[in-house]
Length: 237
Image (cartoon, rainbow, N blue to C red):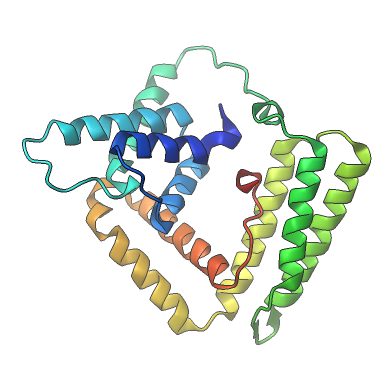
């Protein structure tokens, strides 16, 4: 994906620019960007979709209410992605950009990021469920991150960032599953209710599959915030 590691930042900046005033993205907005990333929606499609949504909004005779969520643009983003996909059929695909060249990452920078997350995980105080310890999984993840950081620092060369990103994603998903299992049901229900409430105005604008993924991402982010845990993805460097 073009501008792989700028995906979040560019979408945030573009949305704020089109809105005209600074607006911090909500948990729902960040979760939505993650669903776009996971669905393989190109950055260009996301930016074009945001433009199309605002052009439609600006064409309305009455604009007393501002666009306060990125979710307002979701339908146009999906439509734009589909249009681009259809237009690309039968054409040669460009050679994918090496993710390691996009932001000019340095081995020391990645190693420091991994060590920082390892320290946060090792210091976290997590609940323990019957037969399952989120604390143990966090400590195991911290050890793995330290090992990865040491190997990268010693080699003084960039690893394959796509492979590293996949591994970090697997570790984060494992940690999330543990948190979901040990968090009291009423707390999880409260977060899901919160997600449903925020999603309510936009349900008709998004496919059911995307709604389900967005709910999952929302709960994921809230639980990590609840326990003060870092995001492991290189997107958060």
